[in-house]
Image (cartoon, rainbow, N blue to C red; front, side, top):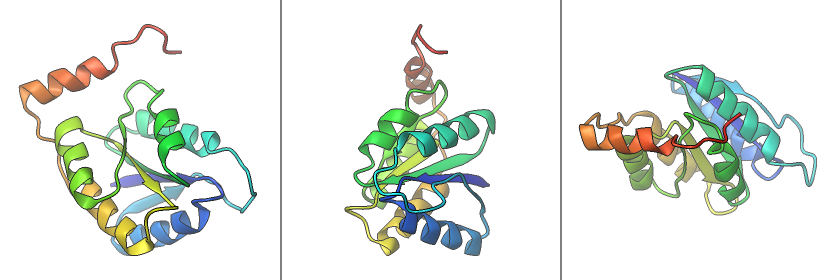
Length: 149
């Protein structure tokens, strides 16, 4: 499975660690930035890059890491077909995949340590969507907007 990763300056170190972990677990991981520590950089750019790649590469997943994970989650969810979920534990990651078919995992660099991020990430990537009628119906409604580019 292809996994696109992105982070701002606050998530840079943990993104780099998580990328290496994913590669060691047999995942195909592509780092979309940030590539260097620039204090105060914007979370928007890596979130947009990951969201666009996940939207275009059907069956792929994304992981975004910033200080709280809030900004990246909001930014990624502005893209049609993207379902970004902010998860702080493995159980919430499983539910995000099973119930909402989330395709981007958003993690907090401030609140989560490396081991916890690894556990959440594996739970997210190894869980399948429960493809039942009510879940599909609800997901289809997520893209009911008229103002997409």
